[in-house]
Structure formats: structure tokens, C-alpha cells
Length: 205
Image (cartoon, rainbow, N blue to C red; front, top):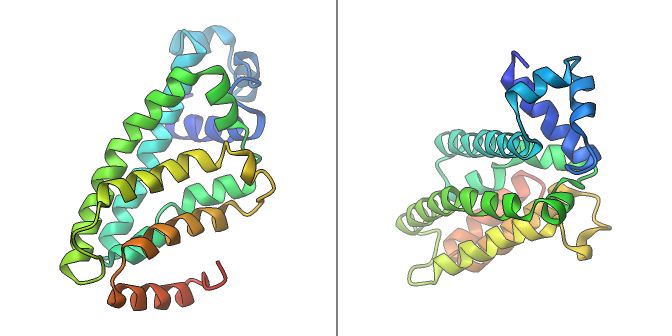
């Protein structure tokens, strides 16, 4: 537990494999070769541990988005590239994390969604304004609604029974981004989007 980053990243992966309810404090203590007493000294309740994992991984993911936005100035490209790390995790692991989180810890689930949405909305609004300035995104649209639609898709896809057969989570993530972008791009933006779909081999999505 000395390396908190490693500890929380490993826990996040374990939650995705075994589920947030199924994985016990005994399992966690055993995995990290520590006593239950040591674990409970740090986290008096399992709920505290879950919140810490969610907050840490959300910050990691959104910090990655910020780094990508600095590297890729085009708002269309930065959206398509962002989230690659999270996509890879959900591609590899059987994700029962969100399902059990919603079922057994609904207050934590909804509180986390609201908290992370605030930052996502801010990022997407800034990127939309940049896209409007360079002629890639349409003016005068209800962008707040489009952004909320996209966030809702991201949050709901993992727990929807309609996508249980979809094994390629990265493809699903990209498809949601493309749906959002198709709704807001100008003709010039559409041309740029098509170029990027070719570049990243997303043309068949």
C-alpha cells in the first residue's frame, strides 16, 4: 500500500474482473499481502475504498484527456484519441464493476457520475467552442444537450443489456464519439472527421 498509485490501479482492475460486491476486504488484503487490520486502518469501510478508487481513476483518465488536448489541437482528433487507456482496460476485462456498483452501491454510483460529469462537460464545452472558431462545429445548436446525450451513452452502455454481446468495448466507445461528432460537425468538419477515421482506421465503425 506504500505505492498508492499502484494499489488503486490494481484494485480498479480487480473490481472490473471480480465485481465491486464480490471482491471482499479479505481478498484485497490477501492480494497485497497485508493484514486486514492494516487495510482497515487505512479504509474503515469498503465504501471508502470504492470511492477512493473511483476518484483516483477518474482523475487519471481526465488528466490523460487534458494531456491529449495539449498534444492534439484539433478538437475532433483529441476526442477520438482520448480515453484510449480506459478503452484498453474495458476491452481486456469482463466488466461487472459498473453493474454491481449500480446494484449494491447506488448512492456512490450516482454521486460519482455527477462528480465526473462536471469536468467532462467543461472539457467538451471548451472543445466545442474551439471547434466553432475554426469552422469544424456548427453554431447555434443545443450543445449542452448533445454533450449530455454523449455522457449518458458512456455511462449507460456498460450496464445496458443491449450491449452484453458487444465484446469490442473500444469499438463501442469510438462509435459513441462518432455519433456525437456527426451531429455537430459542419461540412468542413465532416471532411476532417472522415480524414481522421481513415487515419485511425475507424471507417468501418
